[in-house]
Length: 167
Image 1 (tube, rainbow, N blue to C red):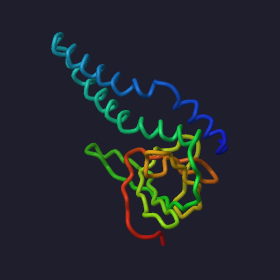
Image 2: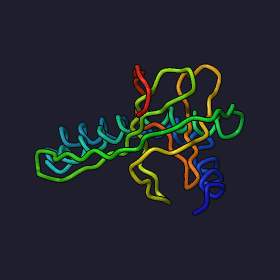
Image 3: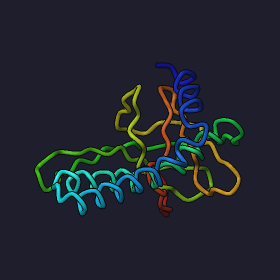
Image 4: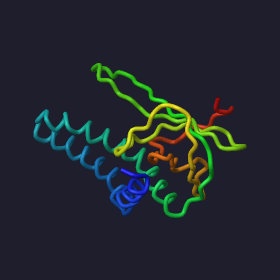
């Protein structure tokens, strides 16, 4: 999928109120499942309720970044920069291996930002340093979208400021 197609898809998928309603919707679902378990004494409801709660937390953390990315693609200001992409793997309690895509963002004369990106669906970033276009919007101090030649990246969580320069 080309960069232009990725931009069009994110703009289409991130528009509207679905993301705004998803977090509270999953939280209500978790509460309803817990209540159903309490009334029926069926352990299945108690097993599903935490999963819905985790989904609610994940959506609540990511939804604002999706909305910012869409807004940035529509009305943002682009600035040249660089990203150093890296991957980090870890195991959970059940020995499942997880991987996250992270980036150190460099902007001329500005501090670095450390970001954990939403895992791209239609392309696979590779580790290394790349020239990029950084997209900024009013009211958000970090870049809301990072445009590489192959695809786009946006934060999964609130980025952290870093001091220093990329090597």
